Length: 405
Image (cartoon, one colour):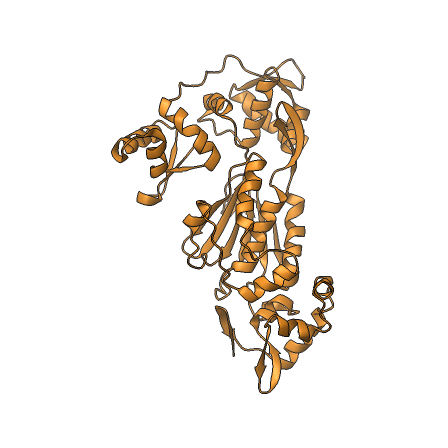
């Protein structure tokens, strides 16, 4: 029986395990690991990283070694891989409306799994033209470091004693969600991570040590703070960490950029129309460029093909938001007869800068920004939620307010 750092007890065939581990020791990742750290034999690597234990006078691999280097890690843990699912739209549907575009299961030793997961997800990260200071610039819809760091953390810090669930990567049109079994180990909490508190604790220190040696991560807890910095530097909302049912830890990344206050208020005139993030982007670009845009520009901006771009534009035409500039023309303009934006409440104007920076606010944030007592602040937020200016999530001390999607 083997027990190691919170992982479940498992039996294994000693002779087969040794053969499997030795066969995998010739992979590029492990060979690079050998060269970087100066090991002469695979046994030396395992011993130095405490991946072997004495048993009946012999050295045998422990569970961490089997998951990191075993030829068939699924033999020792049924859900130690990564599952990637690409959904069409912004929500998952079931039954006859099932909207799965692609589903890929990646099963590899942990020393190889992260690179394979990168290769699986990367083709689905679109490159878009985004408007920056009135000029178009090519940007990925998710900063590379951020989504890759989320995968690394999921592999390194998940709870391997939970065998009924695995790491899942869900990609929608407007966001990516990376889920891993097990909540962060104390004293790290979901709330502390969202507050950007600098806390770091490894649930699986032996696995972390090897992944650090392979160059996937650092043991200094620098990854999550940098995720916030990268998202904000690229003009996106910060990452969001969530507790899913007390079982899964989730990282949510939104690919919709944060608009400045003036633009955000201008977009309010389209509230209630359920515009997609892509439709909002092209309207903002058109606003800056004389109120007009071309279908080709919409394709470049969003990464959509010609057919899907035209369907999206026609959707806006049917609702009176835009109109064609002429019969057969591929140039469109914002309809000047469309209803103007409602007058925003002054409290919302005060809250907007911090809402844009953090993506959401708690009751204490509202109280502090508006300089009101608790009851007065609650009356303001209730009114803003009632009138559709804010959306409320959670209860009591976990209450959060955000702008409508």
